[in-house]
Structures are given as C-alpha cells and as structure tokens.
Image: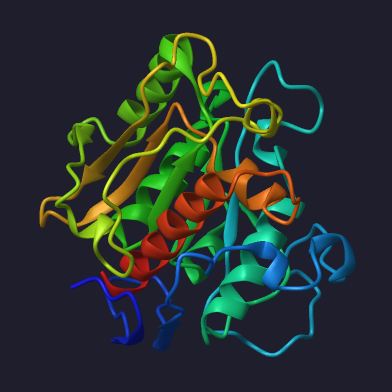
Length: 277
C-alpha cells in the first residue's frame, strides 16, 4: 500500500541479469514536501555535470538515475535524447536524495541502448521519443535489457504524429506485446505515493504563463504501459506531458507546485516499482 509517511523497505531484486539493489525509502509527509525552496541548492551549484560512469572513481551506489542514449532524426546534432539534460536529471537526484535516504548516485548517467553496460542499471529514462529512430543494434539492446528485468520510463512527447512514430519503434522492440492503458488502480500509482489523477504537465514556458497545457493535438495526458508474459510492467509511457521540465525547473519560485509535485511522485513511484519488480 502507498504510504504518506513512514518507512518502505524494498527487497533485493534478482531477476535475470539486471543488477538490482536493496534500499529503504523514507517519505516526508505534508503538502509542501516537494517545494524546492525547502532544499537550498540546485543542479547549477551542485557540481552536477553531464557524463557517464566511464572513468569515474566514485564508490558504487544503490541507485543510478540512468538516461537512455538513442538514435533520432530532425533534432540537430545533439539528438533528442539530450533534451533537458543534464539539469533535469541532476534536479531529480537532488530531490530524491533529500526527500529519501536512497543512496542515489548524484551525477547524471547516460548510457546507450546498445551498450552492454546498460544492464548494470535497472532504471532507464527516455524522452522526446517522437523523434526516435532506433538502429537494429539499439532494438536488440533495448529488448534484451527489458526482458532481463529492466524498466523504462518514457516522457515528453506530444500528439498523434509523435505517438505513431514511438508506437512503431516499440513494435520493432516488442512485436508480441501490446501497449495498454494503465488505470489508477495499477500498482505503479500506489507503490509509494498515492497518485489519484493523471496530470498534464506542460513545458516550462506554458506552465509559467498559465497554459495552455497541451502541445500539437496532445490535448489529453495518458499513462500507458508494456507488460511481459508475467504481467510485469517493463515500460511506463507518459504521453502528452513533460515530467522532465517539472524536474528541471522545480527550483524556480514561479514554477507551479502542482506540476513538480506530480512529476516527482510519478518519478519516485517508478523507481520503487523498477527496483522491486
């Protein structure tokens, strides 16, 4: 059951070849728990810089917020995977470490979908998938990762055209598994925080202006998923919403609290689900 305060113990994960971890998450009660002003400092002043674990000498941590590097088109030389990076990842780690006692790696960690090292990290964040154009090696790498116990959260893509592209890419990865709608009674929404509604989180500019909350023809937010044969959620898909912008700009005093609260709650629930399934 979801807890609004107290201790939630997560057992070690030992499924497949994905590296798991055991940790304890302690939640803070109160409506202002995600008010970033309570937590001095931000990614800009934390020493958080873009990179990967290659060449790092830092001690191992129980959790790594890992961003997927993938091939894309039409988004310039950096690629669509770099949207909001690294600040969004850094901000999320700051809040995660201060609201909980998870031993989370404080820096961003970006790993390519076709890199065998991806299997070291059970949690994967991928965004702007409306421009995704996976290579055969990336298709194979992502499929193997997810079937071995990995978990992917998808974010920040809008409207029919981007949905159709992402749906096509996922059919290449999992031709045998459909994309399904997730109802609010699914475990994902109640693993730690009790999420009672699916909120549309706009981009930062529209959030500050008071709307509209949608882009293109993405008027309604959805949370969808892909489940394996044992009914384990492998992929959670946040369509027509932008959690990453809420993470990235949560420290700004004019950023609406309702959006950052929802985004962090979905993020924490996804982490707990990924590390316990």
